[in-house]
Length: 286
Ligand code: YCP
Ligand code: CO
Image (cartoon, rainbow, N blue to C red; front, side):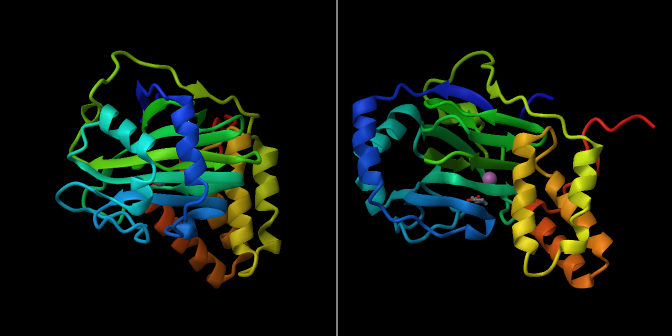
């Protein structure tokens, strides 16, 4: 299936200026906002937002344009890049999303807490092999300098499955803007993203997951959830399947506290998104 997220342009990065900013960035303080979504290291640095205060890491819907924070003002190359590449009037936030050292952001849907949400654009500024993103049943790699519209309305995730730091510039625009209208020079035509081929996910994999049911406790619930969040990056199943599995695991355990926890997680991360078709892709025909 064609992805909702797609490449909308290319940024011509000047390596020396970029490295100067990245060096300064390494000294900046990360926000702990949204830490309930992370497994291992996933953090953001706030470069611009409603108030211009870098300690305010939560997304906000508002009228007007984002104000630069102290951190933003100290990254002149990246901020110039934003001004050159985008129409800035409708920018609501500029952040750095970091995933590092086998860390990831657990599959989720964005904007469920908002009226409209945002049009979110990513530009990878430091990345390497093993830095992966997912959307529904697709896993892909975003190359450095590609300008991506990332559709947060459907379940998705981002990971750095190696050691090292993967950094994306993430820019939120007014949700009423079409992705390519945010850009001064959108590209024409379709640019094929780098899709990752994964091992098959089969019935044995699924029963191995469900075999964890007798071991599931309130104490290890998060660990198991984090384990489940990784699977789709390696095997051909969907980002959202983990919420079906955790629900099944809890149901098999029969414990109401675990069933409730599974329901709560699922609601917070993907809302009412239907996972049933995705727990096992390509099921064997009976
Ligand atoms: C946001 N949603 O929309 C956050 C980013 C994951 C959850 C991290 O700002
Ligand atoms: Co997201």
